Image (tube, rainbow, N blue to C red):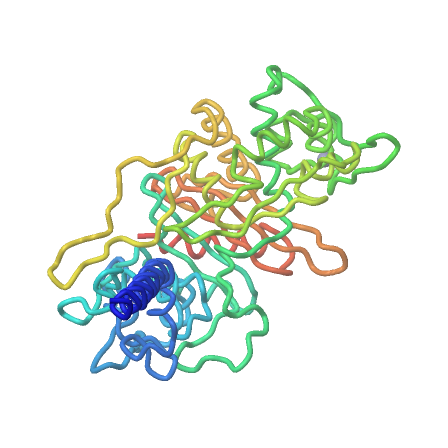
Length: 445
Ligand SMILES: [Zn+2]
């Protein structure tokens, strides 16, 4: 009797122990199952550390960007297409962490918590991207030897049709080291001094907070004095109004506006437009744009109003901002995944209609749009952007001793596309980024 009692106790202890272990395992599996499956030693998905079991990735026109044949993963046979799309498609070792192969590996491999990677067909889901591979190649060629990024997005749907980052590499012959930030997608993860493209933010604040802004006249004496310190302008604009100040990119006017608006209104506007928060593209977190003037003196605030001081811009955030101007104030939800199709032909890339976010009122957006149109007509040259009814702003961002970053942002009124171009240490905004935009936009579908 006494022995049976002892056995019962031992059995009870063992059963409790196993139950606890099973519970622990189920918990761990639920929480970490993804990571275990993704671990490159998982031979169901990886071969020598390289992903092979995944569906076919195509561009918006059906051009195959990556596919698996007999357990080997192949990229497009054209080297230029490989190099122009690698930051969106991603390499097979996960070095481009924002590329589809890494960021969407669950969708591509068909991984599910309950079945793991053993979906019935064993070949994963196919994914069509919103990118146009030929347009990506055009953008890569125009960026040439510059590091930088080109992004083009449909401002009505949020579909990104061009996403190019340079320096780039050929996934069939990847570099040994990662110098020049070669694995970084600069459109999503770059952070740059913006220079004068930031004047669009200051202009937004001025339109919203200064009722008589269009009746005012300002003075530019090849610069302006702010509390005993000099903010220089490239030209002596003399008497100038707000609209012409944006077209001529007059520093004197935007310095005065930023000081008049003050830290709170400038910060409030910048944050409404996406600064100081993280935006996402299909769940991928972009680098933050930041506007930080909490400890700024008036002279600092003046420089911040024209994209110097502490201002930092992520190209994707700015693309979303100019897309909102084009789209009556509403920023579409950016995406570069068009569809995800299971082996049974079912599209599992659910998208709810709408989903955009209003960044500014419709009237503010239309006013900015007209001012950006004026920039092209009276400064950048309509003949460089024929048939596009382009609205744009340049930026030449001073960065100490180095050559400035060259920026060009805007959108077309005849085709529903907004764009951002940034070329690092390339010099003048209109001369370099403007020329790149002109040539790439002429190839828009
Ligand atoms: Zn000026």
